[in-house]
Structures are given as C-alpha cells and as structure tokens.
Amino acid sequence: MVRLAKLHLSCVVGIFSVALAACGDSGGNGTDSGSDSGGAEIDEDAVIDEVLGLEQGGFVTVNRSPLESVHAAERVDIWAPPSATDLYFQIDPPNYSQPVTFPVGTTLIKRHFSDAGATAGDGFTVMHKGPAGYAPETGDWWWARLAEDGSIIVSGDGTGDTELCINCHNPASAADYVMGIDAADHNAP
Ligand code: HEC
Image (cartoon, rainbow, N blue to C red; front, side, top):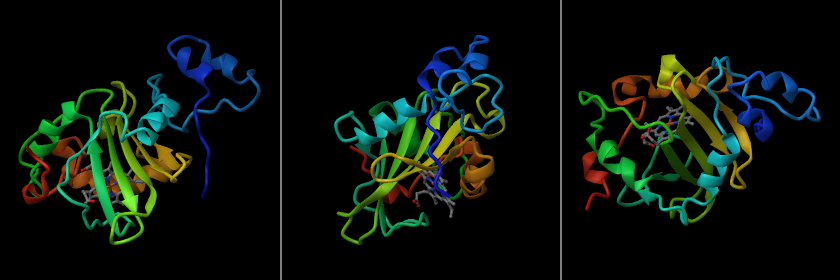
C-alpha cells in the first residue's frame, strides 16, 4: 500500500499545545502518522531531507563494503551520523549482550540497491529516534521504508504498517532495536 503521510509542518510546530485541533482546518492535508504517541511527534519531512542528503549531510557508512541483507534488497549500505558509529560498533549480533541506547534525534539509514554491484539505488529503510514518549514500548523509534525519491511507502511507530519492522528487530531490543552487523564488516578506523 502506498501511503503519503507527511506531517503538516504547522501541526508539528504546535504539537505540545492545543494547536493540533486546528490542524484539521488548515486545508485538510494535515495528517499524523497514525500513531497514538501521546503528543511526542516526528518531523517526518526533516528526517526525509536528512535521508535524501545523506551523502552531503556528514553521514558515514558503518559497513566496509555493500552487504547482503535479509531486507528485500540485493545489497545494502548502512549509514549513521559519525556521533553514533561508536555506539553502533558496540552492538554484537546475534547475542546483543551489550546494552546500547541511541540519543534522541539519531537517524540510521539503510540504503537499498537492486543489483549485486550496489549501483542501482532502490530507496531506503530508516530508523529515527523520536522524543521520549513517541513509542515507549519500542525505543521511541520512527520506522520508514522510503522510495528512491523520498516518498513514504510505509512509516510509523512500529505498529500497523511498520509492525513487521519490530517483528524482525525485536531480538535486538537490548541494543535499542538496532540489529548491527558483524564486527568483520565494520568500517572502523
Ligand atoms: C526480515 C527481517 C527484517 C525486517 C522485516 C526488517 N529488518 Fe531492518 N534489519 C534487519 C537486519 C538483520 C538488519 C542488520 C543489517 C542487515 O543484515 O541488513 C537490519 C538493519 C536495519 C537498519 C540499519 C540499522 C540496524 O538495525 O543495524 C535499519 C535502519 C532498518 N533495518 C530499518 C528497518 C525498517 C524501517 C523496517 C520495516 C520497514 C525493517 N528494518 C524491517 C532485519 C529486518
């Protein structure tokens, strides 16, 4: 199902006030991501801008070379902000014995490729750490599958359309639901 569920900016700005009630009057295209998040919301447009600008935006790849993946892709690269790579490298799949928690605002991006040479981009999967209370049962992450142009295929708080993400990422709950990669694949200095 294709669903364009970008947040109306005016709704985001007023999120902690009663302004939410006014969003319905702003042209009818203001919509939240369908989550019952008790007031803590994600600025989806800002996250998508981060994703589309990842190569200019100071993100780095945590994998040494394109990986095979259980995600529906021939190859993937995983990008993280430099401030998050140390935490990412502490994750030790499949044991997850090392507890890890990523800071609010962290965006982790998986770049999908449809060819084994990792040249044909095929969109992204994204985890963005929302504010406390966004999705408290599942680490407050916002989950999304984006097309190559950044349009949302599915997005949400790990329920509904994005429950499948949690179903797979659950074994890594001690690592803040971040699966990590083998140490041998780390693009570590
Ligand atoms: C079939 C199981 C499975 C499903 C479904 C799944 N993931 Fe993942 N995901 C993984 C695994 C395993 C990794 C570790 C890297 C790899 O092998 O690709 C991963 C890695 C990631 C990463 C890189 C950060 C990390 O956890 O290491 C992101 C971002 C991500 N997934 C987002 C998503 C989103 C968003 C969804 C739902 C739309 C989703 N995943 C659904 C298994 C899954």
